[in-house]
Amino acid sequence: MPDRPLDRTTERDTRWNASALREQLDPLLPGLSVEVLARTASTNSVLLERLRAGLAAARDEADIAADGRADSAPDAAPALVRRSVESAAFARRSTLAAPCLLVTEQQTAGRGRHGRTWHSAIDGAAGASLTFSLSLSLRRDDWSGLSLAVGVALADALDPRQAPGQANIGLKWPNDLWLMDGTGLGRKLGGILIETVAAGAHRQAVIGIGLNVQPIVQSVGADAASTGFASLHELDATASATGVLHRVALPLALALRQFERSGFSAFCDRFAARDLLRGRSVHTTQPDVPRGVAQGVSDQGALLVQTDAGLLPVTSGEVSVRLNPVAGAQVSPAFDASVAGAAC
Picture 1 (spheres, one colour):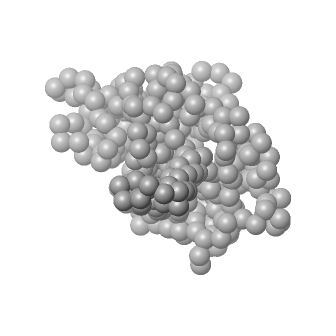
Picture 2 (cartoon, rainbow, N blue to C red):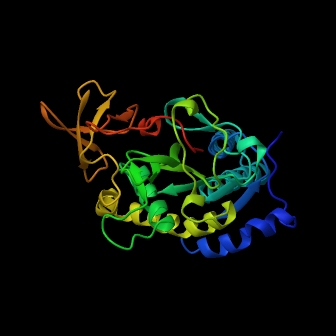
């Protein structure tokens, strides 16, 4: 089924209250557009394709303008055409730089890290998960730790902690939210996928977020048989996809602007309070850090692992981290932290 942008006069617009989101977020994300699709393969893919197509068209228009400058005769008509083309290219680039929040009620080919897949709707039930992507330009050279900062913003919005050490939502480096069980372990609640497109002197970020809202009664995805999943209904039985979006949207926008100003260092303490890996034995696919004990993260968002060779950093890239069982603990299959979960 093709992607279908929301007709602003339909019932879906009222249900998601897109106009209220735009009004709330516009001071932080000027020019924001909010779109809701009934069904799509991946919200990240849709925005990435739009950005790449638009940038290609802007480059083509710029080339045409350059050719016009070189070839035009000294009369008025070519100059007018040239200015028109240049204005169109500038307008296209400005439109691309404008942020866009894209939501889908059903996602059929969501993507996680390392090529993992995830379907957001279980048995075709729209609203079982919240899946959305936000594209925006971030004027910052160092993006290290961005996925961790996004995770902190989401977890704090969904689980305001009343006392130190009492978080219900933990963060698993580098991009997962977990609902913590009484055993001290947990199950995957959601995931974050960040992708970028070069846009002139800056990069355009596409931040994909997937959160399980309703209980998952049938697992989907290649790794689903070996894991457990959590849902926001376990924290709030009244949670809905629309309500969760309105709850996290503003904290997410605030966090992105704070990250743009200060980087991940502004989020270190909040991440540490929810760090799922700290103090646990882990092994990684990074060749120089095959195994060790996680010891938090650096100011740049790298996972720090204590090994026989000392304290070594693990950067996000193509690295997966699997929790090793605590000695003597009864560990469920959900403790394999690298499997697929909600993603965009």
